[in-house]
Image (cartoon, rainbow, N blue to C red):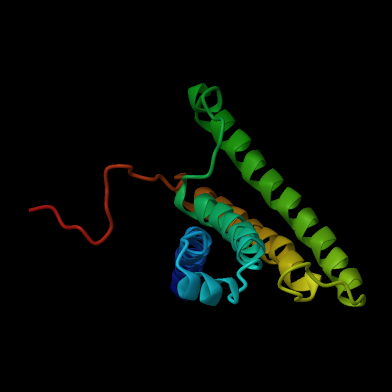
Length: 180
């Protein structure tokens, strides 16, 4: 599992960093193209970055899907558990397990419907407007991210059944930073 955890974290970091760099370059290009220096302006206008926004949108979609799965695994995914935490032990455990299994069911259904959609769109010649890549590549984020999130819900549910503990995120902890 450690390999999958690290792969998930690195993919999210790569997508976030990559999208930041692409948008930064596109913005600098846009503003530098407006500078009235004839040689520089002519050269910059030959560089077409119209695809940058579309690429960033797809990168953020992938990042959000995998980020949600990361959130489930680490205990930072949004959850409304104020009332559930006030219940007595066995009732609380039953509701927590019901919520985790419901999340797994929901994301499993979304993953399956997403897979069906990707399969259908893969048999068309539909491409994205600016990047001109097959649209099934962009939509593949739905089944991949949803199935990973389903797996994470099941993983947390299994851990909860064995230990009675849910993953907790310590907001004060910075990984890699040791206290003196």
